[in-house]
Amino acid sequence: MAFRAAASRFVTGVTVVTVPDGGGGLNGMTANSFVTVSLSPPTVLVSVMPGRMHRAIAAGGRYGVNVLPQGAQGLSTHFAGRPVARLAPDYDLVAGLPRLAGCTAFFACELVRQVDVGDHSLFIAEVSHCEHSDAPPLVFYSSRYHDPPGSAHAAEG
Image (cartoon, rainbow, N blue to C red; front, side, top):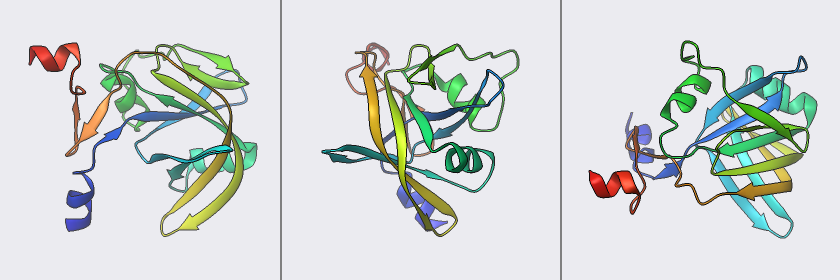
């Protein structure tokens, strides 16, 4: 499909959206459709298809966004619906939301609006807490993972 091929030429970071599962664990989904919307108040959005995560975000009104670090392709694949055998993601709760260990950045999000567009919903949220590290992010371009320019792996390759 031409639209999908053209859209794949836009470089994105890779995130995992997380919510508590109610049983002491986490539900998560890989998303590269994460956007900052406003600095004041700090506002972001994520685009989600109907399903388990859509229901969890709509019901709970909160979600976390974990920006994956370089080398975290296994986590991305795991949360994209292709579970990696024996992978037990390490996480802790920050502001009551699951933050994946080693993430490059984390945003705790409080839902303010849901906008249904086509086959997805845009979950717009104010950021109640965020943090970051200097770890290079995982990058997705042309339907493949890449090391960001200037990273140690990119310099070696």
